[in-house]
Image 1: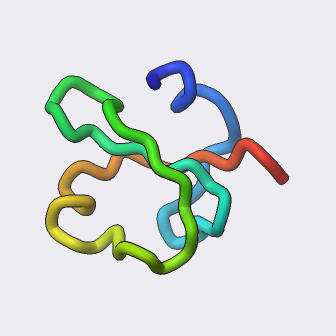
Image 2 (image 1 turned 60 degrees about the vertical axis):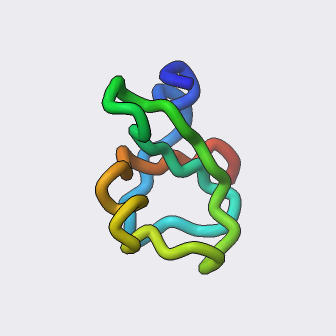
Length: 61
């Protein structure tokens, strides 16, 4: 998963769009979960996701 986080172009949280990869640290040991942004299905501002958010990457144009 860490290799996936190294790939692609970094995307600011406010600029995330559908198809971007969104990375989280859910176990306290670095990037441990990745999702694909689908729009507004689950807000990144809920306590759980906000506290574990690491960053987002765009790998496709």
